Length: 640
Image 1 (cartoon, rainbow, N blue to C red):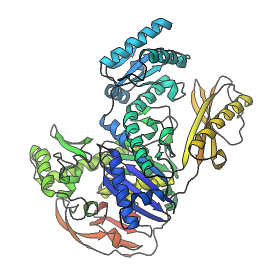
Image 2 (cartoon, rainbow, N blue to C red):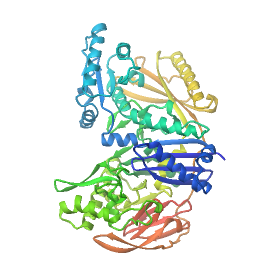
Image 3 (cartoon, one colour):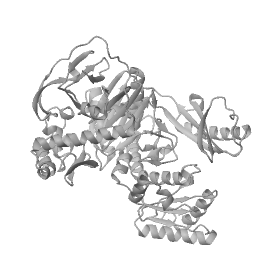
Image 4 (spheres, helix red, strand yellow):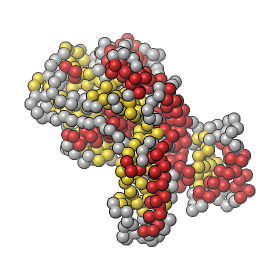
């Protein structure tokens, strides 16, 4: 049996999908921030009980070909500004001002760097440069920096950074206790733009410590179970690779990118022309777009609006989720970006949380049932939810607890819908895909506020990003400058990259002959950049001899994929009603019909108002909307 295990680690919950042929075994567990490997193994234990009828992680892992992992930890860290204190050494004409070119970059610079920056004079050379670099490191260490980035501009940036590296290795050898890790931008990426290169290194340095500590800890525990292959990290470029072959910045938004891969397959299967995705977890709402079955991405990816040197899927991570703190500021409700995560979690979790969240509000409004929430495995406490909402929202606004909860819903919906409208142009062809544990909650309200008429909720909505990882292959990108702008220069560069690719894929357990190779020629001129896909291996005609060329090879080893089937619009029949649920709707409590997804067969259909629920998500179907469930357990919501 060749199983595939996909794991998506979020700030509040960790999702696990085990692919066993056409069968998908899924489960969730609370994220354990004190030791992120613990929640992974908690989930594997639960999955093994479903598969074997008893807890047997060893048998599960021995039967598994690949374990693929993604995380929103890096995304959440940047959203909440929680991470190491970065120090910055700048030279060659690069300054802090040149890195702060708009409001977004100024905000990030202030949060990640602040006063911890040292500028080396442009005319310093040799001994003077060495002495200045040593003084800069001492000053940054005294200012509290625990990681340092060295970033130079100019044609000799790499030479200057290497000179400083030699000096600092002599003065502060890494074997000394307390030695500061130092990252040199030219070693991370080849990019003519010094600001992009510097920001890429800053983000990488910020994300690196937590990723390294957790991922290697998890991989070591997996080796104790004699797993057949190393842990694979799903990256934001849509491919997976070993931990030792992955830079930290490529883990940014890797969780949301998993959802995008699943959404791309969903759009292709159902023919959605424009699929706007909304993945709502505990800490963030991650928004992406599938346009004509293609994931929207950028050659120079943006992180919170700041350009980096790497291609990234275009995902907006807004600081609003199921565990986001909702509070009163200046007489108005503010939603996020701070989150209570899973520890202590929403007040209703009973783990010590006292802040009000939308999860507490939906419990108080009757949308959530303590007996069925989280598959009945997590007992939530309505009294604690009421106490938090009353103290944090109701009393400051002079509202009853129930009206305070309704006001929280409105503020939360408007925040999510506003982010959707900001990210994409809504058209008549737009379908909203709602997934993540909190995505389906009140998606009809979100869709109406955003001007969207149709919604799809995947059958595996609660674990859809984990499921989406199942559409990834093992892949790497190798790039290098083309030293001569002619056919011979291109051929020499390609040969060098192929040698690197052969060694790199060998480390992944694959030969180059097993892989498909895609070539991209990047052309940089004073007018800007453009990329050309090479299909015949030849240098395209019309290349300006003064252009700066670089070649990128994407080398991919295919592995088994998940599959999506199912159709909407076949014969329908009334959905089977399970019971009723007293839920606050439109200013009062109503007894709404409750439909359990697990009770329905293909073609089940019913109008709102109603509550639709399965083990790991709950959805309120509002008046004027209807739902249809197909043979893949996917759910289509449309205006009645």
